[in-house]
Length: 604
Ligand code: AGP
Image (cartoon, rainbow, N blue to C red; front, side):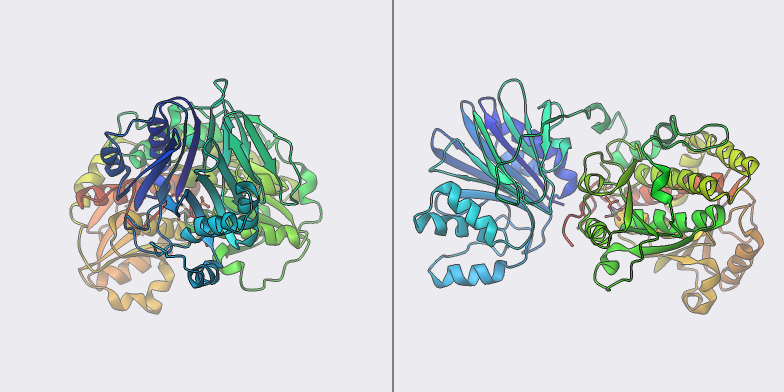
């Protein structure tokens, strides 16, 4: 959600900042902007829409020599996606970029307005730069003014600020939104709201903690922590490589990521399967001592994997499970007991609602575990333990390989817990493990299936809605299928338990209602079949995904015949992802950066 970059150095700042923003564009793409301070002179550029528009506007700008620059790609929270509302925001001598939400911005704005400050934008961000300058006007040094400014702000933020009177300096602060500071051997300094913006540019980074703030010049870094005491510069190597963030000849990142699933699933399993046990080197079994309940908490797709995992934990590990939508959980005054293991699931590790629930669990002294794709993310740093999903960088806003690897880790974890709780025999455990070894093969995209879905997709571009239906663990998969379709096709879709259709939604059934029915051979096949027959009798248009042909279906996507419902789960997952993508392509939508969305939702 929004991307931030910053640079101090003597190379081509414009190119460096634009390149960083390009890497972050998938996080927010309503508008973008850059400001540069070169030889004491400010220049700034803003453009609405995709980053390419900013690139065009900056064509004539040259930024060689000693330059300080900050940039931003926006996902609008306060105020429409217009040029005026695009960052950087300015006062008379300073510019600021910000990610997050300033909760007390209205009160600050009112006060500044009463002292004559005129605001140009509708954003919460603009108060930061005016507030800073008002403190300078009161006689504080730039540093003191910045410190007082961030002390006044409430809410979540990552901020970069530059000002004419400190021409070689970037002031920074982090509270609740991610920010990384990087350096390299050429004495250049970089900021990025995610390491994607820093890959290939710097070798050492500091993942700033909440409450950290300070300033950077070409030859110094000053870092303070939330107690206002000078903090040590704890650099760590930046290990991610650029390779994993390219399209590799695919039309879209989403397509590439669907095709990558087989490979990343192998990575997820690497070193974690033995003949009769799951090996998580990163876990200490003591984490489960005295635990008699698991609470899973997440948002969006990660919530769907949590819901799917609840079926696995109860069926295989015989442990009580509750599943929570993070944005609901955080405000409903939940009861938390200390024999509950609190598990958060997140691709990014930065989702504001999920992060907040983790903080709540920590405060309540619950043991916590995060299942996450991004090492060093806020959640990984905060939780007692973490399991990385190893999906690699996921750029498509519609999550695919992150979901696949989360499901793999959760399935493995259910077996790991089953072993501790002795809820499965050794034979049952090794059967599950042997099945896991097949997932990589099952998730290889078969050209035949892709072609069939491409052909079918033309029949599903209209209608008054889609119902994705399934039973048991295939119900969360149906939810995920519906979410994928909504996100990138903008068609209305709902995921529903098959057996629940007759309690209301079946009233919608007619030929223009499209039902995508998940019919696994090895999970309640006959029950699901009856539910689909009920819909067929009411003339709903039905597309069945199954390994068993079904004569009541209008369309059929054939699966291989598998011996285990989880293999059917993973192959159906591929079919659902391809179906959404092909529909979105036919509708000429932006598959990787669908409207109104952002990859990582760091505001609540
Ligand atoms: C998935 O396709 C979505 N774009 C979205 O629902 C996402 O899963 C959600 O925002 C949670 O993100 P996280 O996994 O990074 O926490």
